[in-house]
Image 1: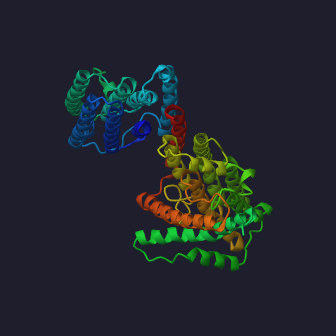
Image 2: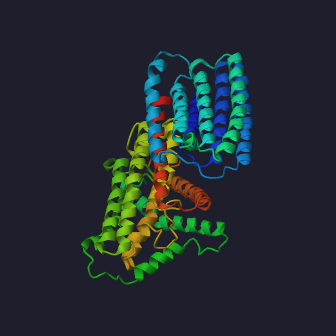
Image 3: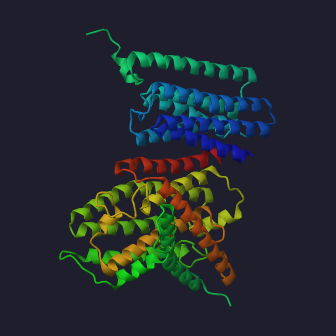
Length: 216
Length: 314
């Protein structure tokens, strides 16, 4: 069972890299949904191994929120805002990949002292979780488009959730419910802001916002 | 009566020589079916080779010895690789002389001389093909080695026979490192053997061809040898993949029953891999040349992730 858990961790890392290199918005949202799905399966398996039932609830919460609801909201946003173009990236994709690999090595180096002293069976996945957070951050940095930056942010949140599961067998249920609610409300606020940015600048490219100066 | 180790070596090389065109024929036949065309039959590659062998060689005036020597060298390295990769049995007399890294080197020698021969005549297409081939090789070979290092790390040996034995003895199948290495290996196999997202094996359009452009000047039995070697290369990569990732069926002891079972297993696996290859080829279209850095970068990424996940997760 622990082997399945580490296998799913590897798949979560792979989807994180997939999101890092994906050019199209639709593909990005699908990958985000897949990442959520693998994360929720992993949480359920960890819950089964350690016999902690509240993990089942957070698994179902992840499934409904990150696999169904958030991708659905993002889809509607994209259809309403008529974003069909390829996503612009700041750097070229192979160098982004190499930075991603460096981040994985860095997070392994960072978590090694913790995993040495830990006795949890999920301790080895902590490095993967931290790497997922960092890759989400990298994605927010390397993308210009507001929607893809938000997906990067949500991927970071996925990584944090994963880290909580692998470091301490999940956060207390109250905290988890609160985070879920926050993410949901954040998604609504993002939606409203996207519409405002879109009507003001006619584009969701954040580079455009640098031009927000008084007339010269 | 027990057959000697050299007998198995001969059988294996014979299987390589005989079945490589058959495998290509099978792939082409499936491709015709998926595209709604009627195929030329599974035996067409043999007929093509026979036709080429019966034709005269036409050499350019300024062809040097490299040009004439290359077909034999390419063909010879393919046969040598067939003696090292465990196709039917992993108890081969040639196997201890070379491990997987040497195999990658063998393929590199063949590629190097093909590129030289492409430039030897001095035509524009030869040079263009050689430069493209080398660009791709410089990206594909690190990924290939990385994938092989991952497999070697996970199975504690770089010798193919040892790898097969370790996989036989272990029970764990769901190892993340092996899965990543397999994904990388599939991408590299498509690249190295010139299949669809990288190079279209059926095209004769000058602007897109890569391998074809280098061997454009060859004719007669030289071309036959090169074509045959290209067929063997695909077969060998498939066999290398089977030996590294799914060796079940390869004989350990040398006796007729085990070798016969191994042969049947091999044919079945080849049939399935042909179907898988066609799924990839019909599902994808050929990439632009400058997108290949991303494709091969992804292969390198997966191989590296495999190696990292070996350290992190296993």
